[in-house]
Image (cartoon, rainbow, N blue to C red; front, side, top):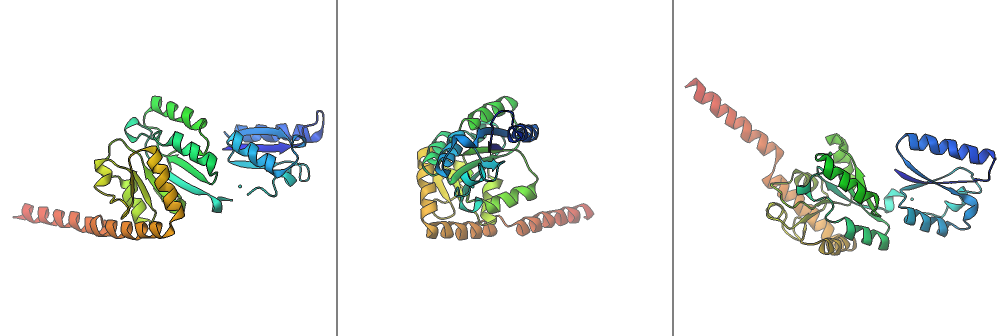
Length: 262
């Protein structure tokens, strides 16, 4: 996580020494800590602008009065965020960078929207490229592979699931999102279009700019979001039922067992 850390940094003071020690603890845990002197700022609005400029995800203050007062009026609540979740292994066919530039521009206009890319590091060379790009992109975050239960919890709490693949068979992430009653925005390729019917079970986009346009629609039209969620859930439960799949495989095995006995 990239953190803004406010402290009183006057030389040779206990606060300055403590701030350096706390920063070392945070960075040892793998976080990026942007340490700033609280005396350099006069208002919460200056801190809000700094958070955006530094692409920070959270802010801490060491001194309650000098630093804490600058954070009191800043709004850092997850309830106000809209997370668009792109689930994919980091490889070129999944094209995780397709939306990054357009999304980053949108985030600078609307700081409450974030694109989170979640998935395993499949291609080491391409992974380095993705990490470098995301590091420079405002409003875009990269998280690693996680257990299925944790991923489902993330899906349930995101605003929408995104698919930006160049090629796709039948996306499990799309079907799982529909089953979990989460809207889907998918790149308009044959594999996705076979599952997602535009404006019925999800939204299909053909360019990053169209993605942003459709995402804005989804944010501003609750009725559209509700319709897509209901239709998506019904589609996946009708045509991709987990129980129906189980019954079909069990029936197949019973037939094989019967043939073997004959």
